[in-house]
Amino acid sequence: MKESEIVFKVENISLSQRAIDENKLCDIWPTVKMGLEILKDLIKNPVVKYTIAGIIAAGDAIIGKICKNPEN
Image 1 (tube, rainbow, N blue to C red):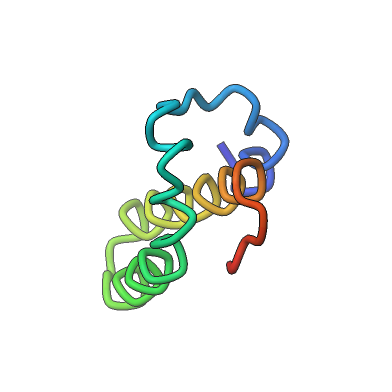
Image 2 (spheres, rainbow, N blue to C red):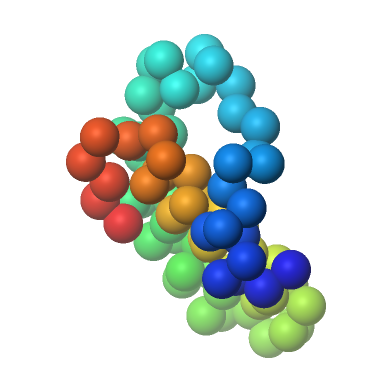
C-alpha cells in the first residue's frame, strides 16, 4: 500500500479506545516520528525503509484523526 493510500483508508485502522482517551499517542507522536525518520535514514534495506515510511504515514493519518492539535 502506498503512503498516500493510508491517509484515505485511515477509517479502516482500528484503535484502542483507551489509548485515544489517554491521549498518549498525541503527546508522544512528534518524538516517535522523529525517531522513525532517523531510523529510516540509517537503514539501507529498501523494504525496511518502505515499511518504516508506511508506519510514519499511518501514524500521521491517525494523529490527524484523533488529536486536537497534531504536531507532525
